[in-house]
Image (cartoon, rainbow, N blue to C red; front, side):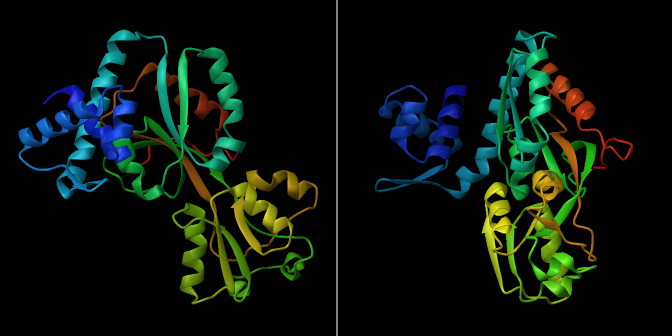
Length: 306
């Protein structure tokens, strides 16, 4: 089994196209076909189904993919370990949610770029449900993750801070002047929420389900900025971290409701796989994030239990 075969397999698994794979790995399509055929013969099982022009992973291919990705990531880490020395350099792939990347990290990035100009920062979105797999496969070196602690045996973490999460309305909404808003008050309301799987969205969903409370309508957004603008226009109640709406609250364009239900706040962590080599670039980024994003309430940071 050769490194080139694993690289071509990983790319084909992502692209599901022999033509695009050949372009990405800078070879001809016949060579992609030959390398995949050789890998399948060595493993003794097909990794892809070829259905006309469609290419799909077989069950064996899906099972093999995380191991191939992990092997390639380990080789990349090994090369970086012997080539970079102690000076932070090379690519650093970080998973971060839009709200954190937009409102918490710019100051961190400016300082990091000034002190470590040879590190190539690559930020990628992630899904909470697949985050552990992406860290294990080496698609992400680390992630800044907002949620309650989770018992991942394969993941290490450092606690950063608590983020307030607010239920929001435009200033003319009847609930905006109510002294306390309970989950039951959301019955029949239009809710503007982030996509399912978002940590704070999940907290609200559970609070409503517990009381068997049904909103009139739920509109999902992949962008927190679009969600915020729609709440400002009076299209419904929204749920967002306080950092996203700080300016709108100061300018009285939005009103934070006096929520009397279960806490919707989340805690942010730095996460990385327990078996990953901690590169100088990772150490530098972790140290800077811990310094810049330390909890203003003075809570002690430390490793989250596995």
